[in-house]
Length: 408
Length: 229
Ligand SMILES: Nc1ncnc2c1ncn2[C@@H]1O[C@H](COP(=O)(O)OP(=O)(O)OP(=O)(O)O)[C@@H](O)[C@H]1O
Ligand SMILES: [Mg+2]
Image (cartoon, rainbow over the protein chains, first blue to last red):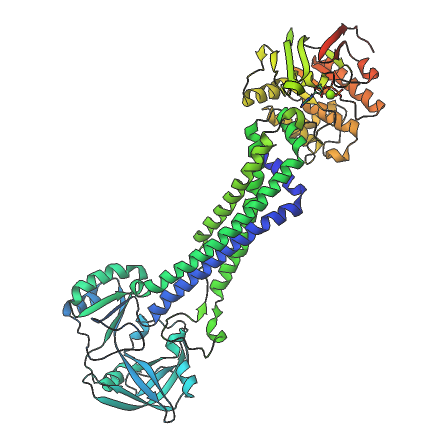
């Protein structure tokens, strides 16, 4: 006959009360797990959007490149040193790399025009900037084609369909104006709302022809693993020399991720309040249990139970309550976190037509399903319950035995 | 052999004008195998005295020795240990743990006494007190007399030196009360267990082989009888 069994029986005696007082713990743990998972998902979305959008794992670009607004000057072009080229070609960490010519163009249909970002790159581009979330209507233009792939948002705004012709006008590297008549080969929904509304992809040759540039403006690098970026960037920095900047995806997203930390903290405060409430509820429940069971406590003491074991008995009840409630919260929260990691919420569909400016983030709100991150909320909940039951347990243990055994 | 010895045992409640001596200067020796009744009017100190012997409380003055060990000044753990090993209790209101079955109540006492007899040993003990087949019932599914038998079985698991029963029949009808007393005396004769009980019931007093009478916290008579029926 263990303490645990006695504790369990006592809790089952007042099921409804136990359920009510543990509800807050269930909700708290669920909130913590789901909330953290969503924040984690948003963070992953931010990094992923940068990785698959403009940055890759690592971007090399000319020094002092502007980072705000829709601004992609072509006055300075990138020259890769032989050392940098060799590193990119030979280092085992590099999965793929590609030269990109990025510039700002005015796209017009005859009636309407829009300032857009154009990216010219070779076939390798798809290996560096992965297109797993892409949905293409029409097709991606061939290398030698005079065709463009437009973000679906641009198509919607200007009423452009696949097969239509548009004029792209831009400033060349030398500062002159150049324009070309281009066929729309396809429209793409990238899963990144900022790209969809602002960006067009062109074959490398077409882009270089438009801006009259022999060299690219960017080099994008994909490594075997994202985590290799900081170390590889270090090596690459030494190789590219003074004229170029090397930026990792971690550096590129650091600012946005810092904002996420604020969100995490707000969530933690909310959950802290919830847990404090549930601690009070549990303390109250155990206190009521202790009052109801004065005679039982007296009897157990008369039978030779020490004060310490009485404390253990009530704390065990708190622990079982907190543990079970924590498990339920973990189950529900974990299930939710898993579900939304497999079935993202499509924000793009929810918020079509809203202008997101130049902020890069995923159109899909999903969770980062991380079982390891669920241990802590569970431990916090269980220990809250244990702490909350200590005071009532001490009260019960200090009863006068002679009086307690005769209590009603 | 004396298993319990009180010398000048005094218990005082309150202080100053409200001071009450629940018992005052009690000298008493209990020998192994006694079957003793404590009688006296309400408030005479029966419960207080039994609490002292049962180590539920320690004296304000004087001394109480259980098997040669003084109880005054013992730590909680030591007192609990004394109760766990030496003393069994039978209560007026039975005091079974309501969420446990009869057998589990007995098992709990076993584990507290450090025995690991388990379920079968508990059922055997219940059979000995005449509760064959009722081990699976909760206290609220048993009559008062049956509950008190479970309590007796529970008190006896550790083979205590002393079983203390404060008004064990007060909540029972006279037939059940008689049956409980019969059982207590049978166990006293079979195992030599010492039983100390208090009562207001002359029928119960008739079972005793020694009758200690209290008044105002003091012993006013202490008579031994032959084996009465
Ligand atoms: N906890 C207490 N605080 C103050 N006084 C107490 C306390 N317990 C008992 N007393 C007093 O001590 C005296 C003896 O009480 P006790 O309970 O021992 O009597 P009793 O003989 O058992 O009476 P009864 O037959 O009614 O059970 C009484 O005057 C009682 O009021
Ligand atoms: Mg009394």
